[in-house]
Image (cartoon, protein in one colour):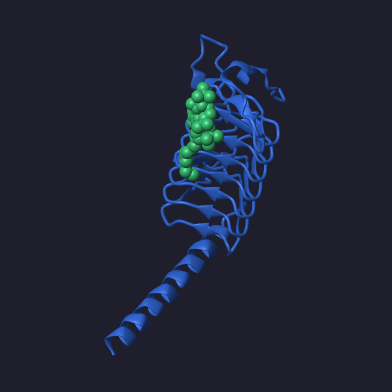
Length: 211
Ligand SMILES: CC(C)(COP(=O)(O)OP(=O)(O)OC[C@H]1O[C@@H](n2cnc3c(N)ncnc32)[C@H](O)[C@@H]1OP(=O)(O)O)[C@@H](O)C(=O)NCCC(=O)NCCS
C-alpha cells in the first residue's frame, strides 16, 4: 500500500512538473523572436533575456529539439540572434550573447562557465568613454560536434570548425579549421582530432589558422 502511494505521488509530481514545463515554454514561445522546441530542456534557473537591464533590445533565440540549457546559463541576443542547433548542450553558468549573430550547430557541447560574445566595444577615441563609442559585432559560428570545455571565451568574428576541441580556460581569438584541438590563452592549435601523433610543443605555432 505504501509503495503504491509513493509511486502514485511520484507520477503526480512528474505530471505536474511536465505541465509546469509546458506552461513555461508556452510563455517563452509567446515572446516575439523566441522559438523553443518542446523537446528541448531549459533549466528553471536558465535565463533567456530579451530585454537585459530593462533595455528593449529584443532579438531572436532559437532552441532546437533535444538541446539542453543548464542551470544559471544566460542567453541574451542583444538585438541580434542566437541559434542553438539540435542536441546542443549549454552548461551551467555559461553566458551566451547574440549581438552580431551566434550560430551553434548540432551536437556541440559548451561546458560550464564558458562565455561566447559576438561583439566588442570600440575604444579608439580617448576623449569619449568606451561605453559611448560604437561597438562592432561580426558574429560567431560554432560548427557541429564541437566540444568547448569549461571556462572558455570565444571572441567576436570567430568561426570554430566542425569537430573541434577547445581546452579548458582557452581564449579563442582566431578561427579554427575543422577537427582542430586548441588550448591556452590565446588558443593555439596543438593537433587534429584523429591524429595518431600529437604535435610537439615546438611546432604548436606552425599549424594554420583560417585567419
Ligand atoms: C583539451 C583537453 C581535452 C586535451 O586533452 P589531451 O588531448 O589528453 O591533451 P594532453 O593532456 O595530452 O595535453 C596536450 C598538451 O596540451 C596542454 N594542455 C592540455 N589541456 C590544456 C588546457 N586546458 N590549457 C592549456 N594547456 C593545455 C598540456 O599541458 C600538453 O602540453 P605539453 O605537450 O606541452 O605537455 C583537456 O586538457 C581539457 O582541457 N579538458 C577539459 C576538461 C573540462 O573542462 N571538462 C568539462 C566537462 S564537459
